Image (cartoon, rainbow, N blue to C red):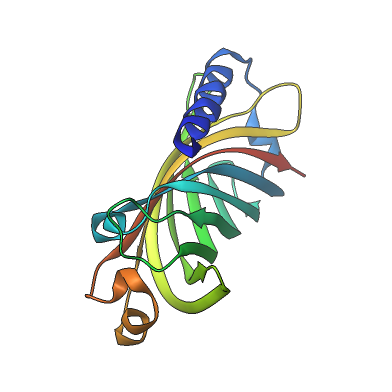
Length: 200
């Protein structure tokens, strides 16, 4: 169900980005912005053996240093990732993260502007079973992303679509605490999100 909802939301945003009139976002730089995003978190590699995709959301604040370059800090929250049918995981997984991102927006003549990001942060994984939140483990990770931003005329900001990849570095402590890291599994995941950015 969560995959269907995520696909529907992203599809609607894609149509909006392609059909709306564009505004010149050069007028927003330098300047601060606030970003809200919602979408799906999708485990990859060994991580996907134990958990399925589910909802995630994020809140970010940042600053356009120039019309093309921005920096921001984000808080990521994945509500829950239900264990897959083949999983031996003891419960749901809650992911919290604090990230720093740097993005570069390319100059485009169309009504949408593509961008690249690099990111890094601290990721906290918590196992939640019938007794509540039991184990928790945190580690640092790095990643990157691609996206597209449309700057409509009807408000000061943008509508965004983004695909991001994260790789979290596990150690022995984490493998003892969280089920999917017990065998030294890789911890990597993708997020696909639609967002709204308000420029100030």
